[in-house]
Length: 208
Image (cartoon, rainbow, N blue to C red; front, top):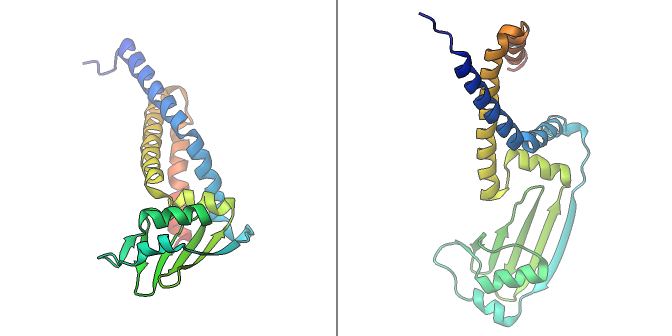
């Protein structure tokens, strides 16, 4: 019994695989460039100098806004009231809306980590004095945090999942295309084998 696919069926699968392969590669292109570059920067972080820029600002809440903090929320970690968050955004460019704050009898404190830096904000509930400090570690640190998904939010987390699926489609369709063309390319499987053996040997011999 002949198990070989007919030329028409083979042509159909080749066309379908090529379509999936180029579409997934187009979706992955910029992401793979980003992850390749940040893979180098992360792997060589000790050789890349970076200088953090720290910005400190102080302000004073108007009485009308401060009154919003007179009543403590039921939870010790709860977002700031919307008028307070809006005032802080306008006055200090501090994005606090929806961020959990730590409430105590004397103070409201917010930790505001972000990609490529850090920040914190403290409000004295009696006087209305506000202290805000923001740290910027530069573009390399920002891109590295994108690579790791550190402090990047829900939208970027979804992008990473979709990007990972697109990479799987790209890799698996590429593997099937290699198999379909391997008969005319004698170096196909030795090269695939090297791609498997080299990292495996390095991991077994040099990673402890």
